[in-house]
Amino acid sequence: MISIIIPAHNEYDNLRPLLFELAPATTLDGVEVIVSLSSCSTDDSENIEVGEHIRFWRSSGTGRAIQMNEAADLAKGNILVFLHADVTPPKSFLSDIENTLKAGYDAGFFSYRFDNENVFLKINASFTAKDGIFTGGGDQCLFIRKSVFEKLEGFDKHQIVMEDFEFFERMKKNNVRYKIIKNDLVVSARKYQNNSYMRVNLSNLLLVILFKLGYPANKLKTLHNRLIRSPYQSGS
Image (cartoon, rainbow, N blue to C red; front, side, top):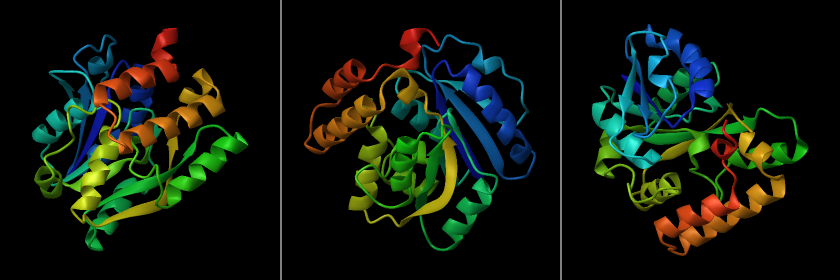
């Protein structure tokens, strides 16, 4: 069984179309969707009506690591798929995952493109089809056998911003076999629309370097909030 886990905080506008996109898959045996809302979400997300196999969970805390870990504990599936609310998967999403695991891999990611034709964003996206410094970022949609996820003890709840990169580092240290599937997800470019292209890229590079150098998680979060303007700061 596949459990698709979507961490969300005030993501109604993105969640609604995504859940309707996923709803047909949940009518099949062996697919469930769990939307894990942050404890301080204030929109009407949990009242979206899309099907009985899509569940909403109000997390005990904030931060994607906590939200995803709690949803993973609830999940019935032996395959976990962590999908951001502003990311749309390709049509062959589930079969791509199943075929990758049948081929002997224990985990994987997807390449992606942005919902914007900007040439610089196309350059950014091109790097997601191969291993590199940004591999393992949440927009790439991690999928993993639940037994392996539990062996690695899930996401580090103390990592508020870099939980995905920290988890990927543990995957590599534990020799988890993974594959990057070259079948693009579509990722929202809203971060770039609320900031400049250069600002986001330089900020991301700085954050990743500081993380790899062992910079404290709470200071990374503070720095992230200073460098990158969130869509929620403008009230959207």
